[in-house]
Figure 1 (cartoon, rainbow, N blue to C red):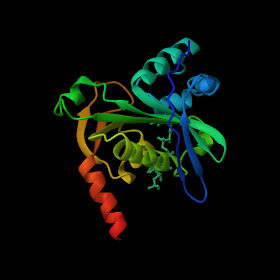
Figure 2 (tube, protein in one colour):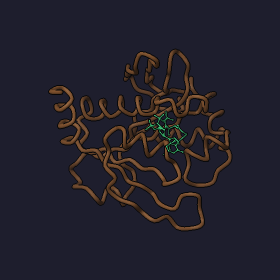
Figure 3 (cartoon, rainbow, N blue to C red):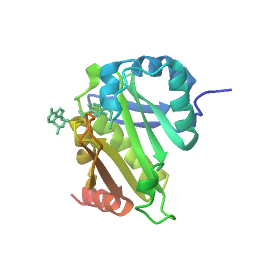
Length: 200
Ligand SMILES: CC(C)(COP(=O)(O)OP(=O)(O)OC[C@H]1O[C@@H](n2cnc3c(N)ncnc32)[C@H](O)[C@@H]1OP(=O)(O)O)[C@@H](O)C(=O)NCCC(=O)NCCS
């Protein structure tokens, strides 16, 4: 039996410089996931908690369970696999409590594991692809995403994709993050922006 539950959605996007394909994550990608999740520098940014490395068993547990209620993707740029991202049903009780229970609220999480690809605009591009997929195909009502104050690249990705900062939550100390930022984009805001882009 597979560890990662896969799906059949492939998303295409990018720009003149970076041809991006989001492919269904599957067990074929486990060697990448083991490597990225054993790199302390990647985990420093990807995880709020201080964790230097995940064992292969922990990787199985994380992706095996997330993939049950998410679209997990491998990020391919110009033919090379560089990271992963997912669109997941909101799992945090305190965030769920902020919304009507009938709304479809989801979150996006992302990690570029190949560090030389950080800061080139790729995260912004593929999150934009996931946002389009969420609202246009999945008919999601709200995207509610998170990052901590020390992760400026992540913060910029939400800002550049037109998310609004809706909550700043103080984190218990000591830890590297002092504040957890909550970012929101609603279906209505997304559609308004799309319309604006077409008119301009
Ligand atoms: C977070 C991540 C997906 C962002 O993707 P990316 O491709 O690196 O980000 P982009 O290049 O699209 O955007 C980064 C932005 O941060 C800005 N930035 C980076 N370091 C900065 C700094 N020290 N001060 C100010 N801005 C900074 C860049 O200038 C850019 O903004 P700009 O386009 O306005 O100039 C990627 O860096 C990553 O996977 N990092 C490791 C794991 C991680 O952090 N995951 C997210 C957990 S919440």
